[in-house]
Image 1: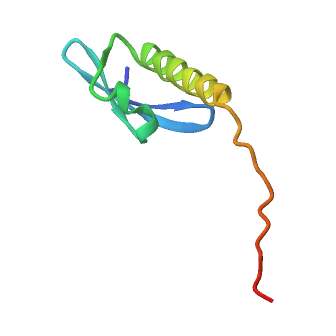
Image 2: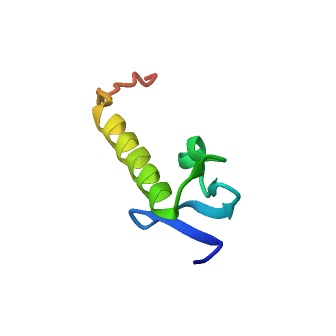
Image 3: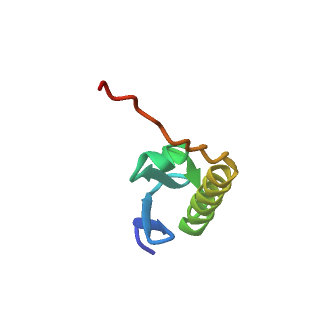
Length: 79
């Protein structure tokens, strides 16, 4: 078994996991996955599932945000 794995989610690099005593430590590749930084996982698959859950949760949150309302702006130009 390898000592390091790249974790990808939805074609995005989430981070890498490196084998240490007691499991695999996660190192985030982007800020989106910072909440997993330094966490210890039993195996690379467990880290991948955590990254997927995190990304899916972020996607749901973004989908729930209200859309901004755009109104036309009328400028009065001096005559």
